[in-house]
Image 1: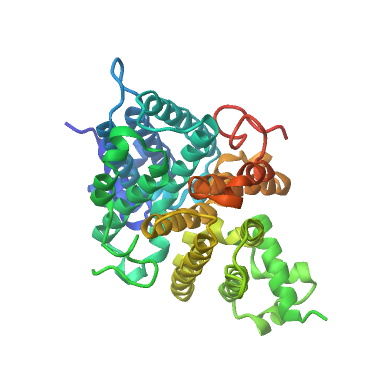
Image 2: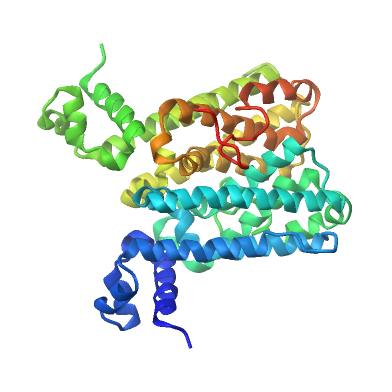
Length: 229
Length: 229
């Protein structure tokens, strides 16, 4: 059975993702759960505490998948696994990256924690790339690897905001959002494409086709043509 | 002589960049200029109008440098010119990209205009990359070129926010900001490095050294070590 505390977190996350954290109050959350505001405040002092715990959940999810398996070399299928996990985690916490500056300005504790999270995630990402290099799936020197990793991070973390900035308000909906988010994975694949070798290089076109949205256009919303919605 | 209208825009831009648009009111702007709020409202109905005109200025700056020179092939020095111009324009309008989602949510007209700006800039960017390809300074197929351009755009537009999210509040200052912004150019150079050929490839290490901040680390704030400040 799910505890009230967990139900508050689940509902808050859904409402934040749908409407934006700024447009959701603790009263909205209590109402959606059918509990009293007093009951909600018994579990969380304020909205910032809910955001902080949701961030901790997100942190754990990323730490969970951003690691190298023990005792066997990485394969190109592992790469697909990382991409899917990145996609899911970005989607699951999209309210967070869309409004990051605002959330960090509101809460010094969250800002510090977020900085640590980025540094730890980049360190984990380095180990993954090193694993891919050992498995001869990528060929890249240390400097280029670090730059590639930072670029991948910025791209993954910024993609939801970028997409949202391009979609007119009246066309924003979850289906389009999710479709365009997949395109973020396509963009990450293109980012690392020049460094892929062996099985990973051999499956490049397959991976690109899997995440590409539309045909003649990288994003649909860019370079003139709009997506068919 | 600078008109009152232009002085309002200049002062607003400086205040927005320094404190963030959200923390600056029209009263602050009038006070900084030594004019009455009534005089300011004579020129601009509200803060959103000031933001919109500052965006139009920014648009013109980008359109001004993102073009291919007539009658001669592009050179690798042109590439440096583009990088410097990107850096300057990003720095000059840093308040805008740092708080883009918020600004676009407030103003439907700005959202539409921004979407057009991105599409036009990507089209211009495509022509620049085509010019570099004709000059045999890059080797890249059409699909990879589009993906590269979108990645470059997202990276350039997101870099200021990314950097800001990592710097603890008490260490944020203009010198550090500007230094870290230069690192954004280093990251863009690394993004396109695999595609460079000829003179551009020959000058790659020189270009990287020119924009790189610190020595052993991509960003200073990442991968453990902090910048010496």
